[in-house]
Image 1 (cartoon, rainbow, N blue to C red):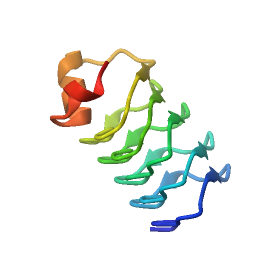
Image 2: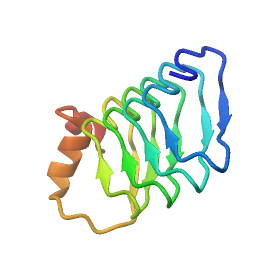
Image 3: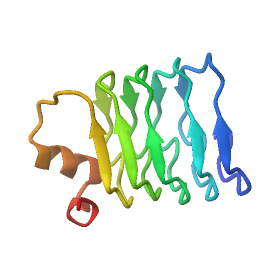
Length: 129
């Protein structure tokens, strides 16, 4: 809960040695617009950026292996890029967003409809355009 509900936080540049963004670290940071992830990052934990309503675009670095449940739920992300290093994405990781683009740079073994349903959990039809 490091910066949980920090109402004035607009930009975050994370340090190069950071390996994990913990549970609820930036949740409810309503003005957060920009995040710069380090290449050392491995895990974005559950609800790390939950309900960051000003966050519009996210590029996950190639070092990340895990994106936790609800990690970006309730944000207003329009564009997200997920690299092939990601081997685990938690349930509802992108629930309640305004997704217009999802960049996947790997071959996944789920049916696209199943993947989208898992990420958006029941709200996928209104999310995918």
